Amino acid sequence: MGKTAKKTSSPYAGRIAARSHFRTLRLDTPFQPRIDALMKQNDWYSWAGYRAPASLWDEELEYFAIRSTAALFDISPMVKYLIQGPDSEAYLDRVTLRDVTRLRPGRVQYTAWCDDEGHVLDDGTLFRLTEDAFRLCCQERHLPWLLDSAIGYDVSIVEETEEIAGLALQGPTSFAVLREADFDGVEHLKVFDLAGFEHQGGTVTISRTGFTGDLGYELFVPANLALSLWDRLMEAGQARGIRAIGYTALNRARLEAGLIVANADFSTAEHALRPDRVRMPDEIGLGFMVDAKKGHFNGRRAIMAARDGKKLRHVLVGIEIEGNIPAEHAIVYHGKKKEVGLVSAAGWSPLAKRNIAIASLVRPYGHTVNDDLWVEIYAMRELKYERLMKRARIVPRPFIKLDRRTANPPADF
Image (cartoon, rainbow, N blue to C red; front, top):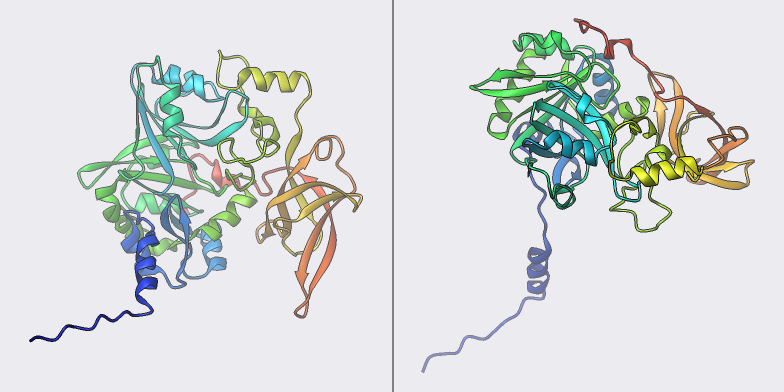
């Protein structure tokens, strides 16, 4: 008679099964093999579900690559929509703040869009590829809202985030890199221009845009041509100091440029959990986008009513803080006592040699009351946090302004 095997149970079996059950892998971009090969820090973060580098080798030197040579940053996780059809212009003019009828093919528009209450859903860039085809790039996903808003319009809206890879090439030698890579005619691109160029039997769309306030370009290419584009740029840029970078360096550069990030410097209408967290365009420095002369657009009535009734509650400002200790997420006070706002982004600017920040304040502070402002910083001193009250003054954004960003033709460093 055979023996019956004795049933045993490992105390770790349940834990292993549980780990496998809830493990969630981050997505890889088409450039991941090249980025993985350059990663020295193992410093990753999640961007829209993708595995993205916070820093590749040294965040300080990566920042100086932006300001001194050329920096290559993977923007593939940025959400991208292809909007095309006979009514595409009328549709986008209806849902965004700016006048799309003035955006001609081959141009890019920085814009934003709101819900019916005039609260900002997101900001982004609108690329007019042809007369009836646009690419909308943004931080958050909005496909259901875009489709609902398209009822009655003859348009097609398709998310192409996975199909289209993107790179940002930023810095003073960025044009020289593109020229060395044989992108003939790229010197004709002015700020917010775009054009198509041949690459490996396909097309790469290059726009003179970026998120650093520097001379720079963004390149979009079908995912199957991504690695060959990366190699083409890296080979061409060897003599021009090209380096791949992560988000930490890019974030420092965008702060110097005074640029804002959705759900970092303001809460989008779809993500805000409390009614006092939403913002109108005028409350986050995007009031210049609102074109009151064009026809109806989402949120128009509410935005105009708030302006006319002077019911705007907040203002987003640039501030300079005494000392050199970054004040990120610090509370802003008036007279050292009354809490009037919060810093959303802050850091020491190596280029401006100033301690800078972006802050959201409750009006009238930052609007008509600009004096006697202070920030509360907690700094580590000999293994103990000390509370520091530092004077702050409101200053214009951008904190730096580089002539090379808009120079025509671009400088050939």
